[in-house]
Length: 619
Ligand SMILES: Cc1cc2nc3c(=O)[nH]c(=O)nc-3n(C[C@H](O)[C@H](O)[C@H](O)COP(=O)(O)OP(=O)(O)OC[C@H]3O[C@@H](n4cnc5c(N)ncnc54)[C@H](O)[C@@H]3O)c2cc1C
Ligand code: SF4
Ligand code: SF4
Image (cartoon, rainbow, N blue to C red):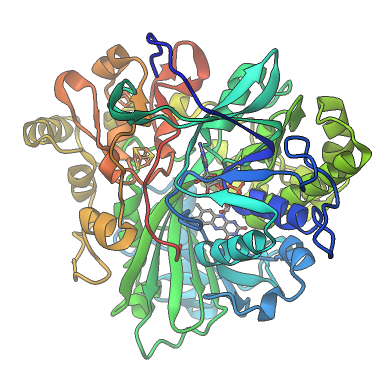
């Protein structure tokens, strides 16, 4: 925010402050909170800021309540089980042990998707020999899948429900405070040392200038700042900007995960614990998942990756086409939407690992590169990194050693390097590079990396996503003529609407048969499913950094791909942003076709700390 008038900020001192309450900080706090107080209630280690008391540990979460993030998950749960041996029988709502697992290759029943010649040939061969294959409803059930994809003995969880359960456990110890609805706006850095965090200003206008009821965000000083704000977190990104990344590392791969939680029809044959993973449709680049919770509830959705070279990659419409695929639709017809949301998944893995520790801070979870891109697993890894940091912190507290980079490297980073998270992360490191060359190379590269423990892989290092985005005309070459695209552009400009709907119609995608209960409009999903809200008096957290670049931008993929329709056409070519529709998925930071002139590793959009978003703890 602009600080032309000096602002008096309140200051509070704590021992440890955490940014974000996702699985990573949940793992950290669950482990730490058990070790701060003795069984007789006396401090096991003493606070520096409140002598005689246990360390003061505060955790600030951006979302309006614990568990309002997105991720219905299947996980091996090895780190979760180590923290909670009773987890399988703990009565966590929507939890189920993993049962039947299937990986399905979905063929395109409409011929609307963009498939390479190799894929079209493979499809033709599958259809020709389908009588001899496990093929039904335009889907091939892969008869064999490599073990690294399996989650045997694992669990299906609703992250929302699990996070609420953990939040209650952690706060029940009395050793930790979690503050939802409290975004952290920046890390406080003095002489390259992180000394705490600043909370978001409230009572400001869209640009952050003081307005009615101005309340400056408080400064929280702490000896240790734990950065656990996920794959697009503003604090992690601030530190990456200030401290740089280790040599050769880069954060260039993401995916947007968009999902529904639904009530399945009463007569569904799908049993709790069922896990379906799909690829091949609605576009070959899009992966899908369906996990069945108890009581006929299912989490289902798709991932649209940043390496999908489409300038109109509209996840919501693709999700509906995926739901309507004949293999899935026979199970989903008659289902009812309970909840909806979207969130970015950081897919750079170890390529994108930042400095894990520095003076006064440590990084954990997906923002620290922990997610395993080969096995599609992030929760267990994030949790494990949190527990490793907690053990290190207890060791340092007990030894009376400060949270310097050296001490954190020798305790936290060393534990992490020696753990399965590191070993499996190394195997996965190059496993997705093949997707830079296409889907078939990507799938073969993944199999190769998985089966050779990462010794072999295909492809090349990822390029910045903005470099990959073609023009609409080039992308639809051969499907929609340039003349027709020009007409679509004119009509959409007149109607002030995005291009993607008209482009998909023209490319042969059938209309969505809205039924008002599962197949609903994007706007209805925002209200019914996401219950999206935005508190008054906060600055816009999505900012178009160089409006002159937007004016000249041909693709405006930020509008086409916005998960909440929160970015929409504006005057003079610069998009508008409507905070009240933003689900905080963070996809706009990589769905932009223009490089940031100050840093070509970033794009022309800033995604800052902001309040509000989804209001559902079922995701
Ligand atoms: C649709 C989808 C499906 C997935 N499925 C699976 C799966 O099946 N299995 C699996 O293992 N993983 C899955 N994942 C990945 C998994 O969700 C992540 O790896 C995991 O959530 C990472 O945990 P984290 O704590 O590092 O980050 P996050 O879960 O992103 O948590 C970060 C937290 O920080 C908060 N935050 C961000 N900025 C601020 C700020 N400025 N101030 C305060 N708080 C802030 C956020 O609101 C959030 O609560 C899936 C992800 C998605 C999107
Ligand atoms: S934010 Fe990026 S994609 Fe959107 S209009 Fe501006 S330059 Fe184009
Ligand atoms: S504006 Fe909000 S909803 Fe749209 S892509 Fe960005 S973060 Fe997601």
